[in-house]
Structures are given as structure tokens and as C-alpha cells.
Image (cartoon, rainbow, N blue to C red; front, top):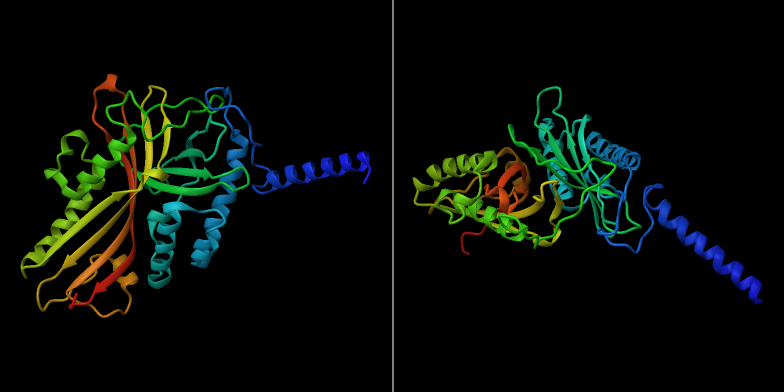
Length: 339
């Protein structure tokens, strides 16, 4: 092969590789850059690209919802949202009862675009409240590499009355944070550990005074108290263990230097109904996932929780604030009585 032919072949291969990189995300993937987020002066994704990404994601979710088929989700849904939505669709298919928690309002209040040029890249989207006054949603869209589609990684319903920190406008973009960010009342890693401890131990947690209680903690407390009344009557017990998935946490730095953290916290809820008693599912979703299995005195339920925490800068001296959450059982098992 001549030198001229070789150069043409290399040029053609380079062009093909470049085209593959773009087409993998429907012409939405910015090409890799060598500069770091500190060198960037504009978002890695434009607002127009974000709108196109969001449309593609919602189209896939709508098709899966209409078909009640979770197998259609994987091309545009990932992470804890894939686990949660797959479970929700299983429940929907069984009950045929609409679940408003699955709704994603079409109105957008704010888009927080990534300034960093490395991967993974995250886009935070805050929706407006739906017409039926449902809570606003915080969506996290993630692209793991230059050749992957952006996918809906996480969705939380924002608590009523919360005020999110301010972020740079879309033409500027926001910096990504890290688990060990300093200058805050706690690092994101520490804040997630504290919040998981409060979820697990309630008001008796050593970290209870450092975190705002929030609606999620209160709802969880109400449910566990109701179950406790039932099991206590028969000398039963219950236990919940919450474990943060630190490495997958998504973090954006606010204009004031605070961090908005969205993270998955896995939990296992074990319930013992008492000797000679049957442990029953505690919610409608648990009932569907339990199916026609034979109840025993002990039940183990695995939940996926997604939480959004605002960690203020040290200068504010404020508490870590939970601003939104989502919770869904993904597995329900009866534990044999001989174990």
C-alpha cells in the first residue's frame, strides 16, 4: 500500500470513528476534550442539546409506561431510577392503578448544565409542579462516557416548601462536586452517612441534630411506628438498615459554594411477626412484589431510596437539609421459619 493510500485510509477511519461517537447519542455527544472543568468557560452541553436529550428519554419512558413493560427502559433509564421504575411498572401491571409518583411534569423550571468536560457528566433538571399540584421533580440525567446515551439516572419528588440553592445560569454552567468537597458543614460523604443514620435510628440518631427532619423521615417514621404496634403485640420485632451507595452520588456545586447531592441509599427492612404468626406485606407495592409466595413469621424487604440533600457552606452555619426523596421496594421475601 502506498503512503498516499495509507494516509487516505487513516483519515477515513478517523472520520468513521468520529461519526460513531456522535451518532451514539443522536448527535448530542460533545467530543472529548483534554481540558479540565477548571479550564472550561462554557457548559459541556447546550440548552438545545439538553432539550433533545430530555425528549428522547421521556419518549422511551412514555412507551414503557403505556406498555407496562420495564424491558423497554434500559436504553434511556439507568441507576436507581431503572430499579425503581421497573418495580413501579410491575405493580402497575398487576393492579392497573395509576401511580402519581411515576409522573414527570412537562414544565421545566430550571436546568443545571455541567461545566466539566470529563465523564461522567450530569444534568440536573427541576420541573414545575404538575397541574394537579403534585410536587416538583428533580431529575438527574447522566452520561457515563462520550459514546453512551444520556439516561435518566435519578428522580426525586421535592418536598413542599423547600428552597433550593441558586445555580449559575445555563450559559455559564455549574461545576460538579465530589464526595470529599471541603468548605461545607460536612463533606457529601459525611452528610450521606449522617442522613442514612437518621433514617435508620430516627430521633435517637447521634446525627439527628445535624440534619433537618424533613417529610421523608416523618413519613418513614409514621410507617414504622404503625408496623411496630402490630409486631409488638406478639413479641415480634423489626429492623431497618440503610446503606449509602457513595460512589454513584451525583453532586453539583451551587453559586454560594454549597453542594446539592443526589444519591442512592439502599435499605433492608426485616420484620418478625412473632412466634406462630405470619409476617405480611406492609404496603400495596410490597403485596404485589410478594406475589403468591407462602408467608412465614419473618419477611425481608429490599428498598431503593433516592435522596437529595443540600449541604450548605461552613459560612452559613446551617444544617444539612433534605430537599427531596423517592422510595420503592424492589424485592420482598419470606424467610423460612427454620432459619
